[in-house]
Length: 133
Image (cartoon, rainbow, N blue to C red; front, side, top):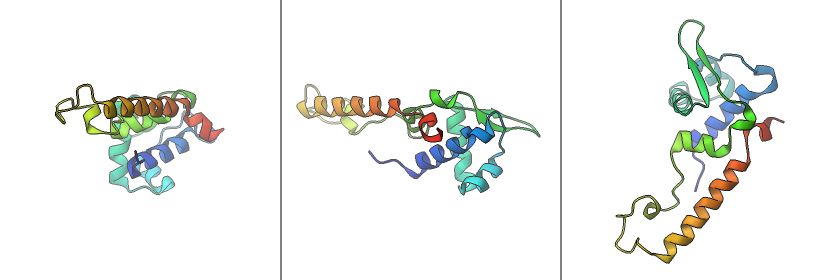
């Protein structure tokens, strides 16, 4: 598994929003783009993905923008990765049983699924609070 640029940017912007000086502040997308040095259009897609997964609140209107919906300690690395990239799969056969003919009962598949579950478990152990504290 590789952390994509989108995930990296998502973590970067969430850490900025969650920082001690910014609690409960609402940020405009273009403001976050400049402050975090993230291309504005790319950031828009990331922020919408985070809002869809209830990590951020998206407020419309003249004074609208984005703010955290959850406390930093309740937002895990896994939550962010899943919001931006979808489920962690490691191998296609773990999510698509029709991917290959030997998927059913495959020893490789069972080991990779254990690795996947361990990775997810480890990613859930770390939160934004671990970065900002």
